[in-house]
Structure formats: structure tokens, C-alpha cells
Amino acid sequence: MLSGLLIIVGLVILIAGAKALVNGASSLAAKLHVSPLVIGLTIVSFGTSAPELTVNVISALQGSPDLALGNIIGSNIANVLLVLGVCAVVGAINVERDALRNEIPLALFGSILLLFMAQAFFIGIGNPLSITRFDGVLLLIIMAGFIYHVFMISRQNKVEQAFETIKSKVRRRNEPHEKVYSAWISSLLVIAGLTGLAIGGRMLVTGATDIARVAGLSEALIGLTIIAIGTSLPELATSLVAAFKKQSGIAIGNIVGSNIFNIFFVLGTTSVIAPLAVSSALLFDIIVAIVATTLLLYFAIMGGKHKLLRYEGVILLIVYASYITITILRG
Image (cartoon, rainbow, N blue to C red; front, side, top):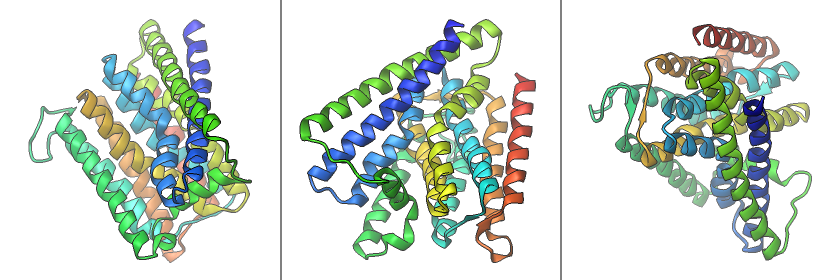
């Protein structure tokens, strides 16, 4: 009971902390006249993946690599199969051409690269079934290259066409209107947000590991299910609102952008702090993440329609329900 309460309260504090951090930092950036592009690339992107980052860092430092990896892999699977599945059922989702050319392929590449890294296929550095510091540095370099590419495109006045994900996140954070606080209040919100992330993340990880230990469940199972879905709640909420408002670009951009950030930044940062051993069971989940993103790409380009239809959303939900069932059965 106490461990379950820790997980629930930890999730609430974690999400509230991320929101306070984004609101305070966005307000501070606005007062400093920082461009929306920079806000989207730094503050908003960090804020949407802050729960995953916090959980991962704490898990890695506490020696729970399965929890850390399960959180990232499970969140990415839930984002595509569960969140986009629900949104597509609510209403058909248009998929921007640039998302098909850039973001979705990059998210797919990230999952494939993770599978190669976990098995030391990539240039043979590191032990089999591990994500090393070298791997983490490489992931961060790719993330930096992605950000640099965005800045270069922005200089050519092509941001509107090339990276709808970032602009969608900025618009989402600024709706229905953007609040600009004083510098003191903005700073306090940032401090409160960071504190909430630290406290909420610690409570969440502690509760999850205690439940896994008492119930005889693996940390990977807890990370892939309870924590993964919990840390995906912000994406689910914002994407559902976007779907109801017929703002499909926001729904797709929010999910695919978060998946990119989770693998290249969150996992990259985590493995640099503490190399992560990968259990052989998690290889199956990485493959599921690859299949989920491939399925999204296929549905979007099938027949040249550039849409995710309701029946395709139902298929995504069925695949997710099947995956969760298999995950629970294997323990």
C-alpha cells in the first residue's frame, strides 16, 4: 500500500514539477526575448521529457538499469501504440510530410541504433548487452547534430516546414495564452519545478522497486508498464486535447518529438552518468519499439494518404494490449 502510494504521489509531483519548470523557464525566456525556436529546442523539449530523465538518472544511480531502460523503451512504445492509437480513434490524424521525411525516420533510427548498441554490434565497443558511456556520448552527439540541423534550417527560414514538432510544442505550451511572470516568480517556478522532479522521481523509483521486490516482479516489468505509462501521461493528455481540437500536427509532433528526445538525450545522458546493463529480455521490447514506429510510418505513407485513420488507431491499441499481456505473462 505504501509503495503504491509512493508511486501515485511521485507521479503527481513529477508531472507538476515538469509543468512548473516549463512555465517558469518559458516565462523567463520570454522576458529575456529568447526566440520561440530556442524555447522549443531547450525548455519545452526538456520539460516534456523531464519525468523520464529524472526517473532514469535516479534509477541508474541506484543501480536499477532495468527500471531505467524499461522506462524509456516502455514510454516510447506507449507513446506510439497507446497515445497515438487513442488519438486516432478520436479522429483521423494528418501526418505532415516533413514528419514522414525527418522525425519519424529519426525516431525509428534511434530504436534500431539502441538495439545495435545493446548487443555491441556498433563498432564493437563495450560489453554485449550494455549501453556504455561511449554509446551515451554518441547518442548525445546525434542529438546535438539534430539541434544544429534545426538551427541551420531556421537560418534558411524553413523551420515552419521542416520541424513542426518543435513549433507544435511551443504552440501547445502557449495555449490558450502565454503567461509571463516577473523574473523572481519565474525563477521560483524553475527552482520549484526542479525540486519537484527530484522528489517525485525519487518517490516513484523507490515505490516501484519496492513493489517489484515484494511481489517478485522484475524491475523491467515495472518500468515497461506502470512507470512508462505514468511518465507518458503528459503526452497522452496534450495529444488528446490536440486530437479533439483537430490539431493533428501537434499530436504527431508531440509524440514523435518526445520519442526522439527520450532515446538520444535522456538515454544518452543516463548512460554517460552510469553505464546501463541490458537484460536479454529487454531486447524483445526494443524490437517492439522498432515495430511500433515502423507500423506508424507504414500507416502514414500507405496509399499516399499521409493520415492515421480510426481503424489504424484500433490496430495500434490492439497491438499495445497484446504487448502488455505478453509483458505481464513473462513477468
